[in-house]
Structure formats: C-alpha cells, structure tokens
Image (tube, rainbow, N blue to C red; front, side, top):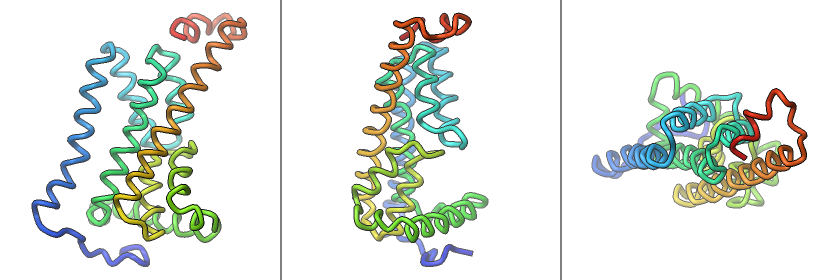
Length: 210
C-alpha cells in the first residue's frame, strides 16, 4: 500500500530518462569512492567505507562518524566531504527515483513509513513550511540519525518542492553541515591534546593525527 497522498504512478518520461536518473547517483558514488581510494591509505579507505555505511544506518550520525574518522588520521575536510557525498548521493537518488523506491521490497514499506513520519513532522513543526528551501537545508545540516539526503528528499516532496530545488538544498545542507562538524571536531580535539586533557591511555590514539 502506498503512502497517503502518493499515487504510486511512475513519473518517467521515457526509458532513457529512467536509466539516466537511475545510473547517475551510482556514477557519482563510483567517482566518490575512487577519489577516496586515491587520497587515503588502504587502512583509512577501509575505515572511511565503514563509517559511511554506519552513517547510512542509524544510530550513527555525522556528529559521530566524522570525529572518529578524524581521530584515525583522515583529514577533517576530506572526512567532511566523504560523509557529505553520502547525503548528496542518497538525495540525488531519492529526488529523481522516489517513485521507484516504493516498488522495491522492504524499502518501499520503509519509505512509506518514513513518509508518514515526515508528514507528521511537518504538521507538528509549522516553521518548516515557512522556511521552505532554508528549512530543507537546516534539516540536512542538523545531525539527526541517518542520512539527511533521504530525510530532506521526503520532506521536500511533501512540501511540493521541485526535485531540482530539493537536491540543491540537500547539497548546500550536506556540505555546510559536515564541514562545520568536521572543523569544530578537529579544533576541539586539537585543543584537548594541546592542553593534555585527553586521558593518558587514549593520548596515542586521539592525539597522533590531530
């Protein structure tokens, strides 16, 4: 059963459009992973992959996975971009393949429940309608559990926003939020290490790379 307010009818213009929007997020993900592979050591790359998967699956959030990556030696700006692109890729897929996800077993039911929760969120937080674009940016920036790309896509859809507008809001919120968290995490960790406030048993782990 489809969520209320959603017809379940595909919104594709033709097969070529369908294939393009289906493969585009996959292509972006492939480039994303290739860049990380080239810039990181094998151990850091494996860690980054694990943290990105953990970010997609609650209860981990960007406020958790980004500091962990920094502690293990991944540059703060690169860790921020790595996590931000998870939001961007999921947001891109959801914005242009929203109708398709409803037909995928398990995921369809999950999205229906998520959409219902999103509708409740809008009803209880009227400010989101007034902020519109800025509201989506804020929702993606704030470190809730799980990917902001999915959350932003669903809320944007329920607000009646154009797909392109929703995606741009997700990009802005993802990059802005992750960079802020990464920068302040790196700064805070450096301050702790400089002032010898890290427990001795954790000093080698926390302070080696910051």
